Image (cartoon, rainbow, N blue to C red; front, side, top):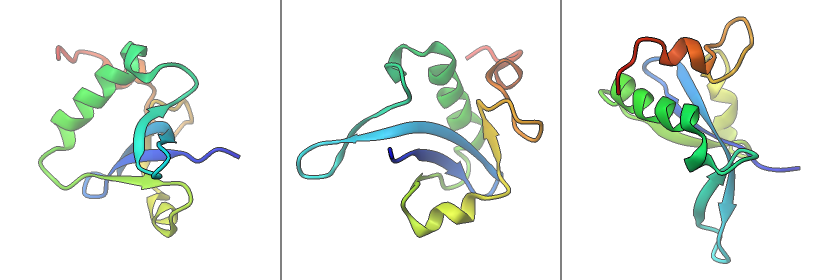
Amino acid sequence: MSESAWLVSDAHRVQLGLGEPIRLEDRTVDHFHDGSQNSRNSDLTRALWKFLADHGDQPLRVVFGHSPECTKTAGRRMIGNDAAEDIDFPEYLRDWHG
């Protein structure tokens, strides 16, 4: 089972999936992987920049799936997901010029 991570804005009650943290031998995170090379996923890259622009006025944090804090992310809208309560990438990126 792979671990997942999210970038979370508690103040705005939204989160952006980062994918699986790929760790180095010392267990620090080298990069995140969502099934493709994240930096080449233009929607995810644009969504990350928009997320920072939209929510950078408040503290942001990275939450890992194994962390007890992960349960505290319940009730937040997920950006990049197509569930009814979430915001898919086309909707989130619509009319954004960044």
